[in-house]
Image (cartoon, rainbow, N blue to C red; front, side, top):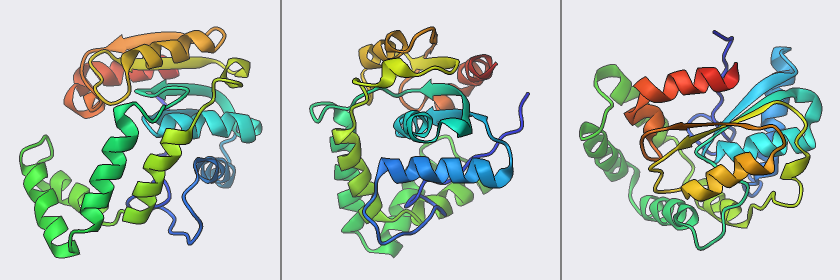
Length: 213
């Protein structure tokens, strides 16, 4: 349906390693730079979870890179009272305190209980093992501070919001509110929790393609 590029955010997997503190605005700059380097600007920017704020900031700070937005399992703000900041920070801190060899064993055990199998599991294990734990901790803090409520209503490109209706990380009412805040935004709802992009791919993927269209 589309030409598609997926990038690793800085500090995640094989993403950029930097001595700078993790900032969502830098992630948005990375997206704009990639779009420019690939010669595909302007592009539809798809953001899932933390990628939602990154996509929103890409529109705000680098509008020439963006022809449309698809925002999935995300919101315009992540107050510190929501589970997302505590979830990311606590997991990242715990993993940071674990030796790399033990960390890989724990990740392998977790993946063995999940949906990843065979070569895919090994690939995912390698990617997760490369995460920079300091960046993940800072990412949790950054999300806790993120608040686009004062400007998100100014978005002027076609936008769709995909909402997993049993999301237990980003409150569903905040995801629906995001769609209401953006003029003309289309909202699509799918079953499943925050991992519905994997656990309920049979429903999520068609909704994502429709959102992009």
